[in-house]
Image 1 (cartoon, rainbow, N blue to C red):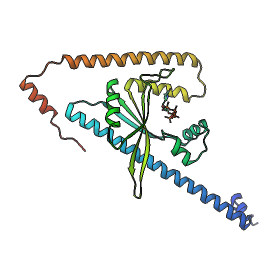
Image 2 (image 1 turned 135 degrees about the horizontal axis):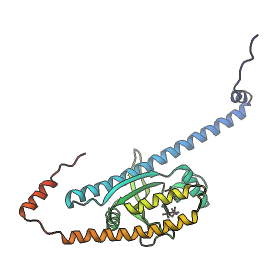
Image 3 (image 1 turned 180 degrees about the horizontal axis):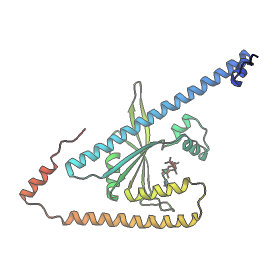
Image 4 (image 1 turned 90 degrees about the vertical axis):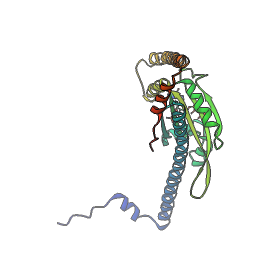
Length: 255
Ligand code: 0O2
């Protein structure tokens, strides 16, 4: 006995469409693919902007390291905002889910996090970055001087810089978050709490976290004071020690 031909429902559906319906479906498909490609292009541009700012920060760190034996930046991490997070932010701001709305209104699609050892390094790095003549500082949120009620501390800068693509120069915005290792440790744990649907004893945990944020702020201040005391009390080296120090610093930068 011959078995009936197996048909895929989608194929059956397509075969039974009128020419007009088929044209409409194709137009929708093209629109969808076009939007996806435009989204991909925009994300590529934000990604390039991140790379430009990251390089600027790495240059500053390398320069300070070779000339002054200071490494204000411990590490840098970068991220592009996830589509879901973009969608939620547009919804929160009552904006349509379109690429032009993203470009005009969302400042943190491209994000860079800079982790420093000491609080004064945060402000030094921020100044060295924003004083560069191709960088425009659009906004500063100082959550170190004015912490959020939950204890969140960090310095946020929205900067704009020109990025050169194959056929155009485009001003791109990047959010730079600068904080200490301890502030970052706190923010990572607090972020985990935010993304859990429900946590038992949440109120207690929130209170504990706020207390920890205060402790961390005080430890950051004490660490800075200790570093300053060390710097002030270090005896100046004699000629031989000075030569030794300089020779130790003599290192060809690796690429
Ligand atoms: P994600 O996952 O990093 O994308 P605005 O941009 O001015 O309309 P917004 O977004 O509240 O308003 O700006 P703000 O206050 O500068 O915060 C932006 C980002 O800072 C957040 O991004 C977080 O990364 C971080 N942040 C701000 N407040 C807190 C906080 O209380 N705890 C922690 N852990 N991080 C915080 P997103 O969009 O929330 O998330």
